Image (tube, rainbow, N blue to C red; front, side, top):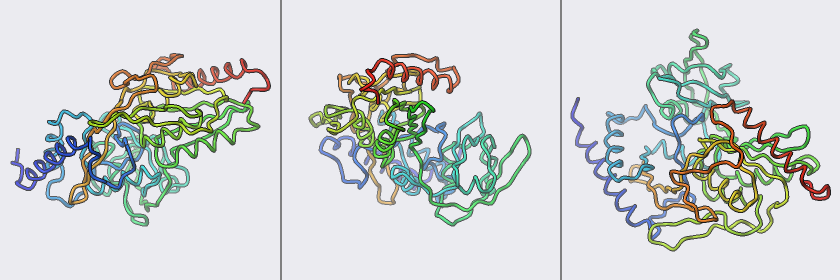
Length: 388
């Protein structure tokens, strides 16, 4: 294997030194990074979204080897959530946390060695061009994508609005090519729909900026205020902790949502606002992909006896990461603290067990049906004057 260049080794050493210093100084607040407080921006490669992750087409001489060296150094810190982002990746991450991105509108997942399209955003360049869910991506701008991560492919699809990108896919074994023009689009991390009997189903894909406000509007706008609420947090990997607190506040009136324990500082209680809806029947739907800030919401509503949890055990991530920008615009993200639910539970490594369990191997639609049944059962137990 070729030897690592001095440039790569110097970058790895600098990242290690900065990461160590930042972790040690985190109790004093650390540097002002200009990023919203408590961002938990970790993403899993298999999450079906177009994520701002590894840029495979960097101008660096050998970005793959450079990245490998930096990430190897970060692993020595013993922080399983430590991450390195190039300048382009981190810029995309900030855009995503702010609820928008520039790309072509695809949700992706890893299937074996392939990256498959699992969703196409309505009104996006990809939808207008005829790209479909189920298509398997074979190349982006002529570069083969087999064996690449979802993050790498997603980053290649992103770019400045009005720039073009070539997409090659296989559809039922037939090769197809598309010339797409990137556009700025909202992430659409909140989707609200209504059942015929008035239950509002609110799906939250991630806790990006503005999610709490959108959830509040969806709850306030349910038809005739007569139905309950199903809050679907399945496959939600987290996001901004402040938005998670705001979302929980929609259903609470004051009191603790979560306690944030930062190294070297007194515990900080994050409180719900005073005007949440504390009467609407509420069910939270979770699974093994419900993590981090999403577990904050589920855990707080469960501990406060405000919701019934339905589904399968959550992921179990009870830590908070914050980023530190480096001189070249890249960033490292390290763990700076942990959170506890209102009852004092640390969910790291254990997760949340549902009140009503649905086998994780059952079809997703079955879990949703079970959750809706529970919502309707809660609604039926209320006096008529208190319903909704």
